[in-house]
Image (cartoon, rainbow over all chains, first blue to last red; front, top):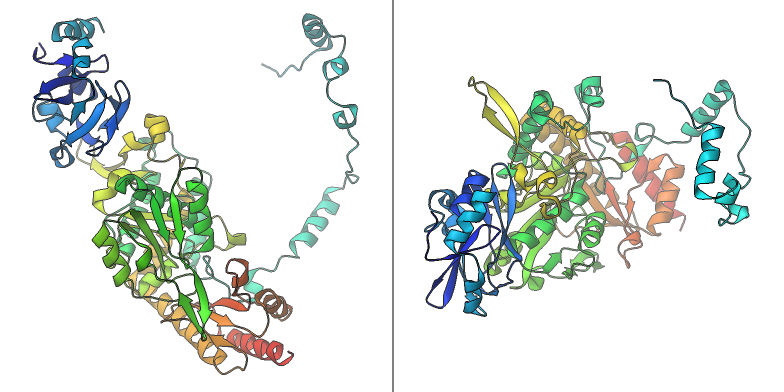
Length: 126
Length: 451
């Protein structure tokens, strides 16, 4: 079961409010599908990201995939530790493997995304 | 099954289906004058006549071997051990196409790996790809790399980087909204006079592109440029002017270059009308993920035996499509093989010897030209195998006059550098004989005296 304290996108990102910033990562299902993550390309602090648009690329030994922003806003922080140890995305997708923190334009948008249960049903059906 | 062409009945059925009476009606919208024009083609020739005609045309060529060659400017008449052309001409190398199941082509992967390894040694850089099309596309890919890494949009090009490299960089950057600053180079008081590159580098600069030896042949102290780039967080893109020079000169890695590229033709590859060449491309480990093209890695198979694989492929176009690091399709594998054989055959000592002889002959050219009235060597520092010389007439006239004397008389700078119409870049290599130098100098004396 995916953590219930956050919301999920159809593109397999999760987002969780931490104070007034939204922490973004990819789900355990996504990291499992990708296989060994070897590189993550992230935006710069201060960049704008747009909901459902690509903000970066995640690369595993066999493929490279776009990362989609769950919400629109400005990047507050990027997980710099992934540069040296991208495998953290595999090991701890919901904690140490977070990707970016975004100051959302409208925090309420997050509530429109899937719950853990809805996401679990989508994944089960895929 | 035999090849069966369209029958008249089938054609008629198709015409009826689309509702036209004849093929002529189908093409009625195209003006009659361009539909089946009478072509002005000469009558057919027999095989004997054809061979004679083609041979006569081929005989108009003036191969380097029949002339005294003093042109370099990116492509160099260096010695190539006979093993290079012999092995490159073997059909298993010569006819092989890009392997679509690369891991099955262990031989191709192995020599690509050897090429990368030798290039890393030669350039003293961390990683190399298995080549790009040529030096100019290497320069453009290096600039794109620097733009991706730095996420800035300003490029400083030293004006003494090869003009064709700069032109290809400009073509790649066209329409991307990137500011490109090119420094001026002129002649003042009998010496090359350069606009400061250091002053053009600022906090917005993605990279500074420099060449050594530069297009004028000069070897420069690049320390101030590298230091300024480091200070403001710009990358240093280093173009190796002639790869043979690395037999003697401080390497790109020695200068702390971030990305180093070069045209590899000088490494034993033929001149053949100025191409094709092979683009060498290297970088620091930190930038590996942004390096375009193919990279071959070494690994072990299930049984622990050494094997070679295409690695980091997820960055490549067949997986990332429009998000690929580059749309460069492939490598110049055959020519990279030639360069690999050359480096293996020459070894460090052989390369150093070729470089030393090239420099010695070029110094002899410079020393003799300095004694001829009306000519002046204007390099603003030491040189390797090329010098810039001002002449009593414009460069194209000089080249024309020298050609009458069986001499390929250098590169006329006026084409690319307004104000330097009277200047030639002259090159000598280990292939240049003392007799050829004497011929050049007496030719220059005659031409100068006639004015």
